[in-house]
Length: 156
Ligand SMILES: [Zn+2]
Image 1 (cartoon, helix red, strand yellow):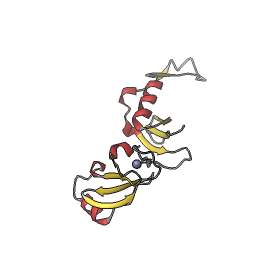
Image 2 (tube, helix red, strand yellow; image 1 turned 45 degrees about the horizontal axis):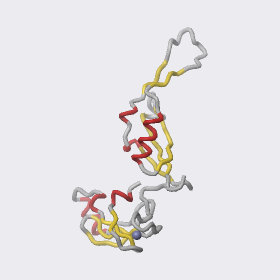
Image 3 (cartoon, protein in one colour; image 1 turned 180 degrees about the horizontal axis):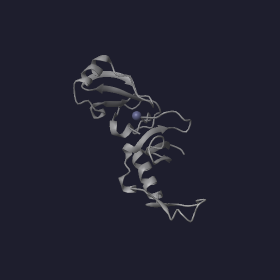
Image 4 (cartoon, helix red, strand yellow; image 1 turned 45 degrees about the vertical axis):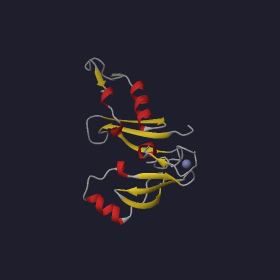
C-alpha cells in the first residue's frame, strides 16, 4: 500500500433512497481508483436467495459502470485513517512535507501544504468569494529543492 490512499465511492442513497452503493478502493490517485473500480465491477448483479422463490421471478441490479466519475469519491484516507486531500511529498526531490503554497488567487502567501489542506490568508480568501476562484490559481513550491510544483499533481 506504499504511496496508496483509500478512496471511498458513494452512489445513489443507501440511507434514504431505494438503492445505494459504497466502495472503498486502494490506489495512488482518484483517476487510478476510478479505473480499478470500473474494471472490477460487473454491469449487472443478479439478486438471489429469496425465501419466496416462486413469486419473485428475478431481481437484477444494473450498474452504469461507465457513468461513475471521480466526483463520486466523497472521502480519501491514508493508511492510518486520516483524511487526505493533498500529497505533501515533493514530486521533484521526494522530500516529505516540504511543499508550501506561495500564491493563491493572485495573492502572495506562504502556507505549508498539509495533507488536509492549507491556511489561506484573509486577503486571498475575501477575494476568492468575489471571483472564479479555483485551485488552479494556486502556486506551490518545494522548500527543499526550490522547484515549482504543479498544483494538479498534489491533489489526491
Ligand atoms: Zn523538492
